[in-house]
Length: 503
Image (tube, rainbow, N blue to C red):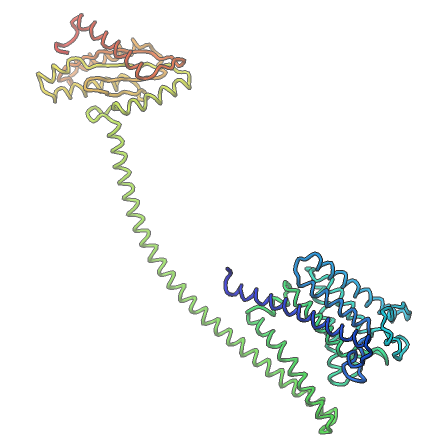
């Protein structure tokens, strides 16, 4: 559902469509009654009052056809309705245009008495069935405006307004008995009901121009729209009422026509001044209301800005606190992640971390066509150190072994402690044989044992296996092979007397 103003706007548009339909019915009735008057020879039906100008058959027929076209125009996107509207408008344009050609060119095109209404032929005059020039012009303009009803230009609206002015002039001529306003020649008068029908017909056409600026103004809820509706309904009625009252007084002999004209001018000025003052007062009231609304809006905006500032400060403080909590939590999580992946005693990778990193390193090496070396290393004599010197001494020996291994290998190599006295190292793209790396480790061990940093001598047994990038051996199989080689190395060193007792 739309907002309340949108709902009111839609209702007004529906009222305009309803008005156009009522106009179409009214005009059709006027035309059909006039045709019935000619068919049944009832003068009152075709001339309203005895002695007044009668509506000719062509005029009544065209008004009826235009009324049907106007009704079809209210049906929206109906193809049949659109076709009927266009055909009716085109026929009205044809008859009105041909009649004007007859007057201008002074010819008889034999269109005045085509319809079989015999009583019309007996009327006085040279062309008894011909519509008046003003009527023919209005019929032509009405047909054009109805034909181009959906045009986006201002032409249909302009033609309809021109027809309204011509027909309104004729109605005023009848009201004030000024024949010059509705008659051209002796037998070329626009009938009063013709003028009324044309006025209604074109007001209905304007009502269907719902996207025009004029209609948008008249139905809008703005101050301009309200003023337009008020003035268009009040000013014409007041001015015509004053004229009618003055005309009655003049006919009664209370004053002559000059006095009547002066009084008409005076009363019109007074009326217009009153309307102007009323309009100005309404606009002043609108301006005051707008000013109060703007002041209230400014106050609300100031209060809102203050509230927004306060709320922003609160949110910033809460955000800073939240960021600090997030940073602290991230720090704790990072530390927990580090502890879960790091051997607490040596600072090397633990078993879990080794298997994760080793798997990634092997995949990368195979993708880059690089060979790898896997070392399985055991700290000799740890049990003897623990038994003789205590577990603290054993921890120092493990730490010393870890430092030797970190010094012997690169930062890119994965060095890990996977058990109490067991270490593993995975190195990719080494560039030297395993024996060379083993010799380097043993040299560093001897250097440590000979230094003043050594409190308890250490010894390492090592086994190494190579892994070609074309081999897809699982990590567990490689570890088992390296472990077996390490154990064989330990046996050889024990047989050679290079191990501590109880290793």
